[in-house]
Amino acid sequence: MRTAVFAGVDELADALAAELLAVLRDRQADGAIPCVVLTGGTGGAAALAALARRSGEPGVDWSRVRFLWGDERWLPTGDPERNDRLADDSLFAAVRVARELVHRAAASDSGTSLDAAAADYAGVVDAVDRIDVAIAGVGPDGHVASLFPGRPELRVVGPDAPSAVAVRDSPKPPPERISLTAPALNRADRVWLIAAGAGKRDAVADLFEPRRSPAAALDGRIETVLWTDEAAAAG
Image 1 (cartoon, rainbow, N blue to C red):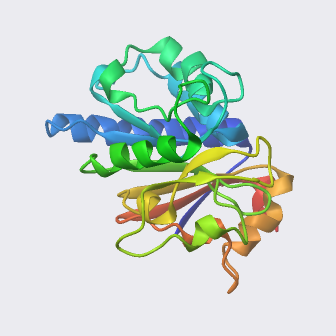
Image 2 (tube, helix red, strand yellow; image 1 turned 90 degrees about the vertical axis):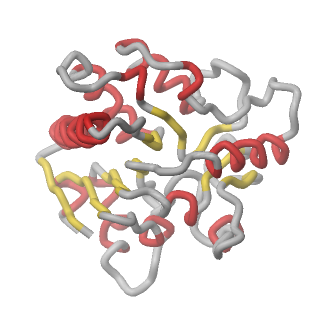
Image 3 (cartoon, rainbow, N blue to C red; image 1 turned 60 degrees about the vertical axis):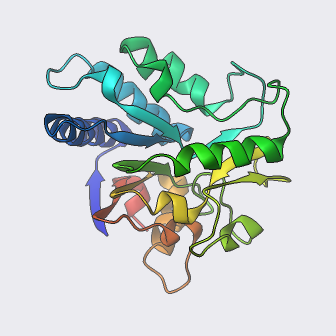
């Protein structure tokens, strides 16, 4: 795992955005439609804002970028707590994307059940042949996406594991969610973990201890990068 330490979350987000843009440019130069897994949380919001600020830089055709989410809150369409709403209000407000390449998990008012929505999203992820970058915010307890310590979703592993699962009784509200599984996230060429702020010190330290937090279960096919700041790295 490569560790990149910055003075604060703003500097971290700007550097992450620059590196992501370079990946997108390179993949599009090869004629591909790159795929990015987005995340929510403070770090995810900072990264999306940095991408929006730099979205006018040449070389990236945003209408030829595929988007997934690592997890989604089981809330109505447009709810401000949904992760896709965060992207709508920041990055997608600044760039023109192709609707058919923006893969949202169903909302609670979609007329389907949580289990059916998770199964449908797993099918969407399974149909994507390559994930270039999976961005995952790390919680104070080491959780990533909606994979929390000690939860049964972490035991969804193996070659037959679904790419997405329903989450109930989440220790963090809202209680119902849809989450990609660790095997799905580990399909990504690059897994980028974001952990910034003094509240993430223990989570960062756990990444380097024998005991394994949920974040420590992620491992990109090409690289795994911990994007952190001085406050979180102090532990």
